Image 1: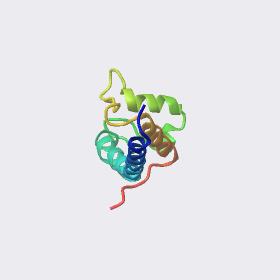
Image 2: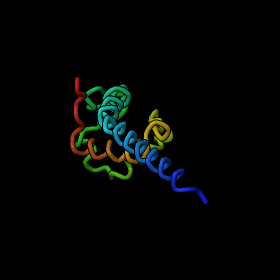
Image 3: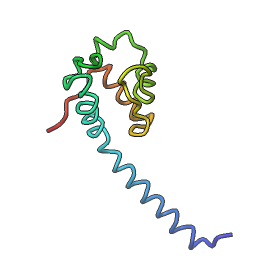
Length: 110
């Protein structure tokens, strides 16, 4: 239906676009660290030791199922000040945050 000379530039363009997306995601961990340390830290404490919200340290989360943390991040917690972050984070981001919280969340690079 389409001549090869039309399809080839489109495929090449998509490959370049895919590379640009992959490169943009390379900075995502730094963005997520900042988000958790600053935005989540405004309620959970800047050191994640607790505040308005509970502590987010590995010791405090030890008995919490990772899936429950994932759901709380994306959907919030009804009846609490915990907002949903679904519009800001995707599932990959939320799973990365949960894994890092359970292991000991990294500090922001300055």
